[in-house]
Length: 171
Image (tube, rainbow, N blue to C red; front, side, top):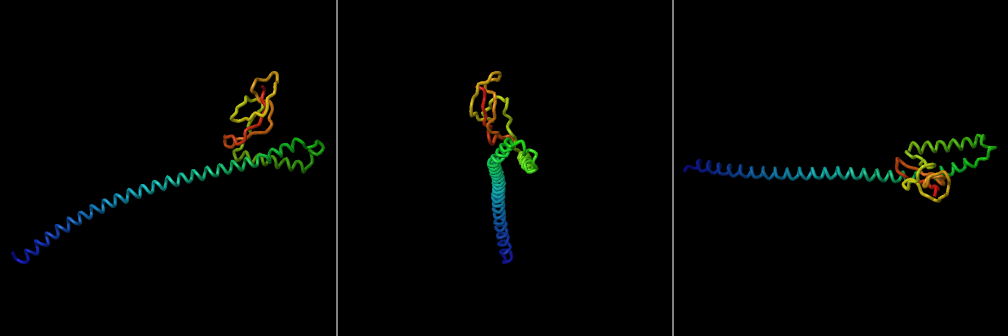
């Protein structure tokens, strides 16, 4: 065989071998690409799940903190209402007293805007989900288990009880 034919044969063999190597390399690259893509998709899904859980946790923390804040300021409203009950008649028309009462109304309005609602008690049937019984009384003409006196107001925040009403009920 001539030198040229030998070289052509060698080149064809090298080309065939080179093509086979390239095809193997392409297959490996495709395999790696699929692995990397699947890994990236899992990582993205994991991140989105993490982000969702963190948002949930943050929301829960904020709701808990807000609930605790409301619980801590409710005694202020209680004290304002007690003070209102004990205003002497001779100063009820006083401008300063009217101003304090206006502050109480603003405070109530603020709490309502925040989703705080007073639990209705008088005449209602005792419900341990909303009421805490602090006493019993015998009363004629009233049904057993009916709330007859409110000792401390109860409140809900967005429909959930944050402070049960303390009540006396018919025995």
